[in-house]
Length: 281
Ligand code: NAP
Image (cartoon, rainbow, N blue to C red; front, top):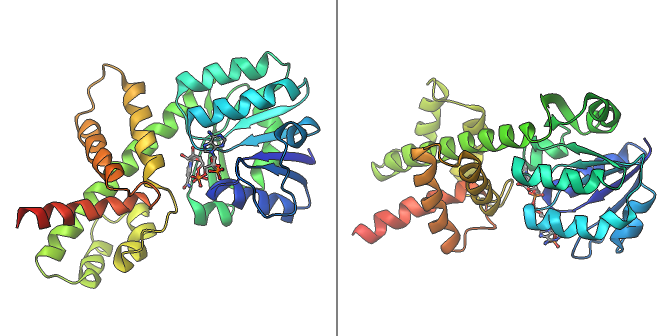
């Protein structure tokens, strides 16, 4: 596959499109708001019409719904649509039917790895769908990723992705609360992280976020508003299954969203702990 359309040039879509261009593939990329890149195509229908593979990576279910509404009349048999935005199994199944009604193939393709991983081609894909669709997509997705896991039928990859993000959100909260406790006790961050490196509580997440916590740098690698959306979708997926910590964490994210932290990295939630401390005084 040589002709690729990227739908969505946010943090991740921009990194992927750049890497696909660097690999010599013919890329056309669409974004809702104009982007100043040579492969930008303002008309979504034109961006996807001749593509062999279309990668969708936009914000949330309403965003996927909006782009599909414009794309579907241009889709045809032989094309492969890989949907990589994090959404739930419920929405994935619905969008898969819309795409497949055109004769095009749908591949559920959520992923893990934030901005640095996408830039460094270290994304990990979780794929849902037929093995034939996975194999068709593999040459292109391999160029963007370090690992490709075929999870199962359509819907399973989204549920796994939401479960992974639920774990990350809880881990980030636990790290934030632990770090805040030592800050309040006057222990320097340098000592905190030196101790964490020698503790089994050290994790991939703590290594990734340590420089950002220490610099109080909340520029987004993965935004708080998207983690908030993923917690909502995880709770919707859980339905009547009681996930007590997830429910509490979602309320805490509501507060972060209310304070205008949505566009910051999700570790920006730590400021809420500081806020709560201040308001106690
Ligand atoms: P982002 O930087 O916030 O970009 C969001 C993209 O969605 C932008 O291109 C935005 O267009 C577009 N969009 C939003 N609403 C839209 C609508 N109604 N119609 C059409 N386009 C719309 O997000 P991102 O970090 O690249 O993440 C994209 C997806 O990947 C999300 O589902 C996220 O949860 C998932 N994800 C992200 C990461 C990460 O670390 N960043 C990791 C794993 C999964 P405009 O530019 O016009 O606003």
